[in-house]
Length: 87
Length: 395
Image (cartoon, rainbow over all chains, first blue to last red; front, top):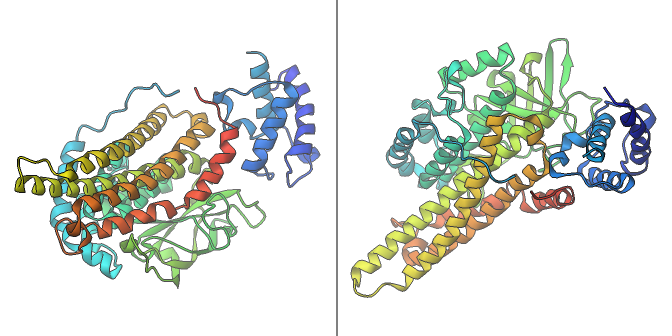
């Protein structure tokens, strides 16, 4: 379950996805827990996505969060962002 | 990140390795030249491994297998490669398929029964991951499983299926359905009675000639329960990718180690001729031994890390980009070093290494060694690594 701040982040994350992730579907059609890789996220676009998220939130993901699962869904990204911001 | 305890080999490994070396000397080595020359399947070697129940080495004891671990299998693959790299490669490829089932499918009754049959009958399982039009990008498929009720059909054009004609079953990757995207894949077990293989291409290569890796059109059907119950993405990151690179690296290390062993024999022979003067080749041997040391260290470090991750069984760890990077580094490093090592050993052995009919022959070792960088092409792997480098942080 997403916390209140995680819900805020999802809106910003959706904007970033729309701009950088080049998905096969419209971001509006994605649920928070939709599998982004199945929606067309590739290893190359994952890089763009990660850099854009780090840039936007002014964070650096630690190694423990640098894995495929972190970028697997809007919810997962949101939880990761919250974790870094609170550390 | 890199400071972890070393997982232990199984207690019975030493005895098993003795048997493997005995089989290697008595049954595998005598046919290795013929297997290579004729590009034929190493029937005698595989039969011997079956009679030792080694094809079910990775199956857990509760299902009748030996319950060996990845560190054990690494040593066995290395040992087999002393005698015949094609045999070692077939054994290694088979173990990867068994591992896919053991890691991901034993929750299903169907697969529990299947592994028990595998133990009893010593089934040999092949792999069809690459596809015409996709090449070595195994995380993409064009073909799709067509599920109707509780049966499926699946057709795949595979540019290589190693030992496809000699296998009892094949594990195939495909898109989950006709509507699925390219990397939304499943892993399907098809048994010999389920499929036909139509040869598309021959296998006449420089090395690994006994792997009989012809191209085929695979036409299959079966029961839906033969589809492994987890997404292929998960099977790939936890098993297919790290297990493959671990066992391949191990057998390439075996080729390299045997080559250095032959070089050592050559140096000894020279030293005996002139006991008071150390031969020049002894320095060359010391040099190549440092490269072998590097190769062994790279392999051991990565196999130990993988073994420990399997013991911890944290699913996040297998999708970590740093882990994937190191698994790729293992492959790229070992595939390059094996060629260097065998080449240097050839110079030390001199004409006796260059001849095909001497105790020190290294021609087959060298030809097999060149295959390592091509399966999958190192440039593809380095390409993947360059993307991941940006998403990685040390320590």
